[in-house]
Length: 459
Length: 48
Image (cartoon, rainbow over all chains, first blue to last red; front, side, top):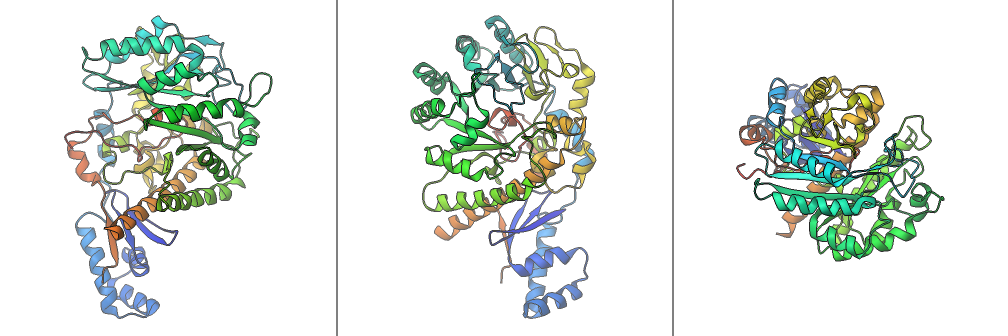
């Protein structure tokens, strides 16, 4: 299967199953499109006439296509479908990442919060050190031979429980060597409680920090307000700037959410850039379809255009020597994930789980509070095998719609929580999300092709 | 005349041979938390 598209002056052909990507001229673009449906002679005559070139020229192009097909870089057949359950098994059976909900409380009350203002539709709660310590032990015990273990301090607002965060990191550091593990910590924060101590701690211990900022002040303050309704922009922006300046090149992301209120989110990305931030992520809102915040069909063309313009901005700033990163446009064509990872997806419920302040286990942070998805707890492990099996069986080929989709090995079947909330099944398909994802991948691949093109012309 | 420029990419079919070590980053631990992005992760397999 192939996918071909034209964007920003590039003709791009992706060979889905081999992962190959080709940048082609107009003749090759049409020839590849006709290759499987049109006899060679007919194809050559057709394109010779269309482009006013000799049939020999088209024939030469045809031979290049043939060569690529024979070397497994075009029209590669899908050999993975039957292997999928076996491939997924190889990456499951061990837990390597936990989302640690150290705080089910928040000092902001963002209206669009998927976590119900941090409480996940339950009571406010903070995780005790003992529970957190047990969660870390549970992770070590269940991580098999995996060396790199990931723990994200999440909430609610995790800095409302900063003392426990510090003690848990200290505990993990004290035991990681004896177990031959390497903890990678991340923290996701709204920024309200960032101070010098937090900055020093994060820059020392967190391999990544995710900082919530929606972009323009009026957009940010529309949702991200305190209990009295005061916007948080003016409080957090200087704190984020100080943290990032002190970070010394270590990884961070400014992470925004865009909603029906700002489908023109490129303006928000530009605001982040103007504030001096260069590592950026902007996510479509996750909410009920009938919510006033939900993106609509009318928003879609606007969002698509914004993604295209964003890719052009990324290219332009890279050329000017002022590069920035957009999370969804990071694509590692040469050193990206193997086929196992691409088939298995995010690993929710199998190699990745969320832990509540009380120590309950859920398939991921987005399922917390949905009682039927409770997997078990950190003392007794997973006892809800039925639900875990459902996630275990969630590979890219488990979804009918994905089997024939060109993007399946880039999204791995998508987010189980999005699927569940859109369709009532973790094996469903959140179509709106798919369309946005496909547009992002097209933009990401185009921007990468442009970069490689430029590198070639420089050398 | 060369009509096709092939970008250097990882051969996914080949990756079936030595892949699956599981050391790579969990996608939701990075920056999204609300969508599934796999292709932007980097491989951490030392034996690939």
